[in-house]
Length: 240
Image 1 (cartoon, rainbow, N blue to C red):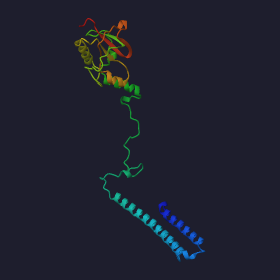
Image 2 (cartoon, helix red, strand yellow):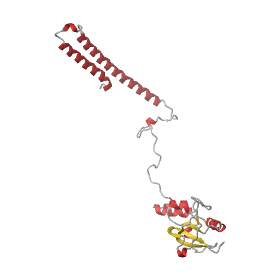
Image 3 (spheres, rainbow, N blue to C red):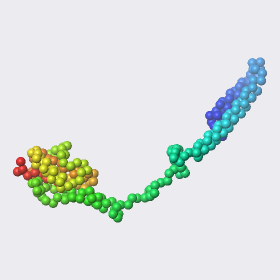
Image 4 (cartoon, rainbow, N blue to C red):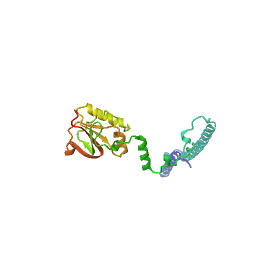
C-alpha cells in the first residue's frame, strides 16, 4: 500500500489535470487560445509522476529491509559483556534476563510463625528485652515519682527531650536518667511515658519521655487530662 503522504501529490496532480481538461472542453469554440498538445502533455506528466512515486516507495521499502538486516547483524556480533539495548528488554524477549529464583512467592515468617500479629509480638519482645513503660507495676518509683495511669499533664515542656530519642529502646537506665533530669530541674513537675500499642507512635515515644513544668494535682484532676496511651509520673511535692 502506498503511504498517504506519497499518494497526496499524485491526487492533486490528477485534479489539476481534470480541471485543465474541463477548461479545454469549455474552450473548444475558441481552440486558438490553447497550445496544441497541452492535454497530452499533462497526461504524460501525470503518468510519469505516478511511476516515479511508485519507484520511490519500493526504494524506501528496500532501504528499511537493509537497515533491519544490519541491525540484526550488529546484535549478533555484540559481546556478552556489552549491555543489552533497552529496546531489547521488552517482556518475553529472549534477551531479557530471567526472574530471580523464588520471585513472586510470599516470604515466610521466621520461627515458624504463621500470622502477622504474633510476629509483631515476638518482634516487640526482641526489641524491648526490658519491657516497656507499661510494664512498670510500682506505684511510686525509687526516686519518689507517683504513677497515674492513663493520664497526661497539660503543661508539657514542648520540644525539650533531654533523654532518649526516636527509635531508642526503652530500658531501666533510660527511666532512671529521665527521673534524674527531672529532679535536677526545679521547673520539672512530672514525666510522661508512652504506653500505647501503636507501632509508629512507639517508635517515636517509647524511648523518649516527655516532661511537665506546671502544677499537678492528679487527685483533684488539676493540671492533667486523660489519655489511654500515656502514664503520668508526678514528682513528689516535697522534693525541692
